[in-house]
Amino acid sequence: MWRHVGFAFKIFIRPFSFIGCGPSHCSLALNPRSMELLQSLYSRLLSLDLASIFWMIIFFGGSIFVHELGHFIAAKRRKLFVPRFSIGFGPKLFAKNIKGTEFCIALLPLGGYVAIPQLMSVKELEGQYEIPKDMPPISCADTVIVAAMGVIFNIIFAFILGTILWCTGMEQPQSSMNNIIGYVSAEITLPSGEKIPSPAREAGLRIGDQIVAIDGCATRNLLDITHAIALGKNRDQGGPLSTITVLRDGQRQNFTVRPILFEQNPHAKESFRIIGIETFQELCVAKIYKNTPAQRAGLQEGDKIISVNGEKLFSHSQFNDALEREDDLQLTVERGEKTVNISVRRERLFRTRPRLKMATAYGTCEVFPDFFDKNFIRDPYTDSCTLQLLSLAPEFREPFPEWAIGDRITRIQGRPTRNIAESFSAFQRAIGSFPAVTVHSREFFLPIEKIELIPAESRYSIGIELCGSYILVHKNPFQWIKETAQITFGTLGSLISPSSDIHLKNLSGPPAILDTLHTFAARDLRLLLWFVMVLNVNLAIINLLPLPILDGGIIVLALLEKIFRRKVAAKMLMHTQLAFMVLILGVIIYVSFFDISKILGRRDAERDYFRQRRLAIDEQSLWNGLGKTTPEQN
Image 1 (cartoon, rainbow, N blue to C red):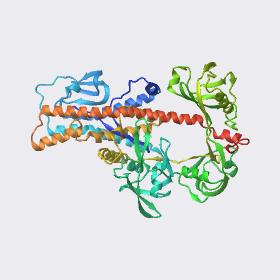
Image 2 (image 1 turned 60 degrees about the vertical axis):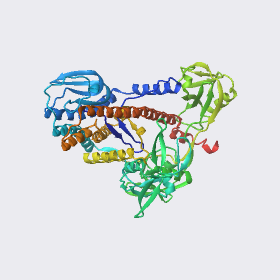
Image 3 (image 1 turned 90 degrees about the horizontal axis):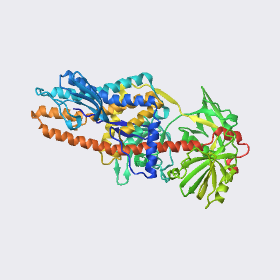
Image 4 (image 1 turned 180 degrees about the horizontal axis):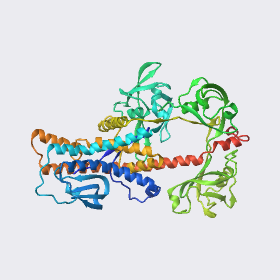
């Protein structure tokens, strides 16, 4: 009997978490927030397209199948009795007997098993099956071979996927492929809105420094840097510590940095160590808007900006800082094999639309202007528009079930909405009463208690869009597997270290695996292959842990019995295995509880992103209408 209770690692450039197999959890409290969370999950399920579902089943189920197939083939080759091969636990959804083995798919996708009673038998989990009376005992060699083969098959599967990626290549941003500091933040804004000094700036790190090691471990790229900091195990009474070794002017220097814990997912209270840096990225001009200083100055698409006012550029953030400091910019650009100097003057533009935030007896709602002429915006406060709903409190669903984000308010007190400034005045006059607003050609009475005009944000611009460069990376499968294994072992070390900030709640279960598989399947098949490769490497490593219910524990027990020439009592072994199974399932349930919160947190982040997209103003429309109104005139 083999338990495929695997934990794998989901690795991203900045946020990362760990994945395992486990059940989901949801609250039964039907308050508005709980209803919103359940509706978010339901919407997520409805958004799954058939192609994504197909790839999720193939690769998630395939990873389990490959592991169990290794055990099955080895057991059959060693002529062991194998009554059942199951993907999942619990009631059988599908079963078919082939040559004495029952192949089945079970209800709970917590892993899988191959029932081999000569090794161990936990019928409470596997169900009942007939055991031959003349079944011979298993040898130590058979035990080790059968136990190891699941892990070997996972590695073989990962190697095949890595080979495919080696041939196709994986597109990665150039900024993730180097270890040169491209930007050091002056301060970091926490989710609460509080601003604190950047640990990197306080420690003395500078733009252009090359980070060659963190806490004695070599760093070659952004992924190495991010994980070395996040998985750090050093701390003192003042908090987390990292010793960062950099090359500056050809000299190695050590800096002691105190990372902060940044809450990346407020839903799950998931925090990781950060220090406030970006790595080097090239500044390529991707687009030049018409009627702009950049166009008049002679900048061209494809130009690579290498310095501004004599300061070498290492990142987009550094360029934005220069825009905020100087009116006149002296740019040095590479154009093909030539170097060109260009003078350009910045101008200030609106970046977002203003919005109205209304507090009502049913909670808050927000509206923003939806301009009639979207290609020629002079002033977002006075340009003709209707009002579009930007956000609605959950409590609005009961009195106004017809309302939805994106609906338009076309009239206030029977008068057409002309612009947001006049609409603000109309709502202000109606505070304390029930003004009539028209939505879907119907009038609704809105009990307004308070209203606030949140002004439009503005920024400096020269009329260009910048982009970083991408590199098609061809790593051989040995490199992929080695890098994944190193991060896996580093994470396990941090997980058991009392001085790190990696805890069980940073783990996640099947919801995270399936959510990531869906995201990558919809984005790029190569990302999907990479993730499944990472998953299989981690499943192999975790299944080698010396726990009685995992492959590693079976191997260790067989070797100990061989060395000491004594068998562990069958009853004691069964109770131990059951205890560890309960322990692991308990961890999975705990982990999956936070998993749902993480997914919902990411959904909130997506909503915030699209909210910002709705508030943003197309820059070209502003340059078209810039002749009459700029932010300085308001």
